[in-house]
Image (cartoon, rainbow, N blue to C red; front, side, top):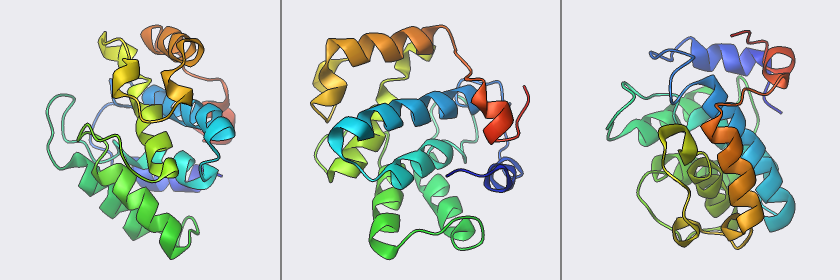
Length: 170
């Protein structure tokens, strides 16, 4: 579970606007996308949820930012054990998912694939329609999930639970 304390530790180092394209509403939708996909794919839910809050946490800008995934993975490493517990094998999956989430890869462990798809399903926020051909998992390629995610993304939906569960009021 993502705690308010973990979120504060991440946000203390987040240099961009919380309202930005890669900010809190994106992280929350990626988390919900991942939860929905993981219930179908069997991915490790803790890894998927942590990916949602770390993958873009170290962006330096809202545009092209090579290396931001690795920086997010390094932040995850620095906060591990202090703010969340994750075994070595699962942490390796989280690190890989963060580090390579913008590389366009599709072949990986099912948990990593679920992470990547959860992010790709939120491309509507930048007016890019998610493409089944660029998804990794069979679940993310379905018309139902793509439409559901894209509708939320294009509306920049901010789930109500962000205030109560993460302690963030925007």
